[in-house]
Length: 64
Image (tube, rainbow, N blue to C red; front, side, top):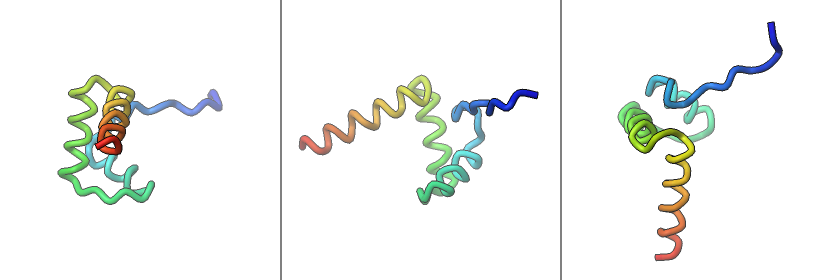
């Protein structure tokens, strides 16, 4: 068996699993918010696109 850790694609996780990961990192989200996050990631085409969109929105908010 390899010692490599399998990477997990966040879009493959259930909403409750996403919520648990966020809670472990200190983010307080409810089940509805976790489901919305999962849907957003799926709709935008994956985690990298979701992170880029959030970064862009953050930049726009700071510029406003």
